[in-house]
Length: 253
Image (cartoon, rainbow, N blue to C red; front, side, top):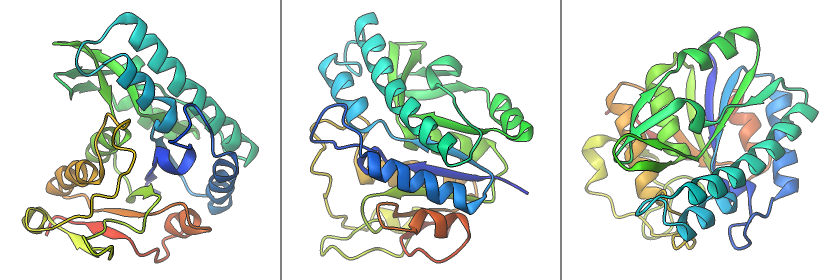
């Protein structure tokens, strides 16, 4: 059975208004839903308040330094460890996989990613858990990589049954706050999206529009994905079980 590729946003797992603050009850709930689903999957999580403030403070995108890299990576590892422990308590053989260790970028875009190690982990029975991170960049020295970029890259490389991006809203919203049911490369440029991300001042990897652009690139490779609300009870479980969770489908056409 092909695994599911699931990304959970940092806004679901952390309090973005308070630096390095977990939403512990949400982490436990989502870990429990994943465990109950008994799905084979690869998990990616956003950095939330454990990465974006540090990356912004140290100007990783503009002028990366060794200190900035260390502080940002240390913060996201702390979040990753907390999520791994919750998943382990829920019965999953989850293990952290740090992008800094195996991804190379060039001017903020992925230049090298060896997905073979992820494939072998899945084959071995592990649940790999990746995260937004700071990674080496062949041109700039270091760059920030978002969970959405990792989702796109792995979705293009791995053979997966479904791709989902769990956020704290009911999918992609239009200016009236209504969920857009489907977006394609053809329709995207004509959409008027709601600028909802009130935390954009500390989110250094992009807002909903950036998320959709990454998933549209995935769609152009023939892989459909779904943006849905992971902050609602049982939505992660239902997505993993193949049930209807609403949201916004990102499709090739």
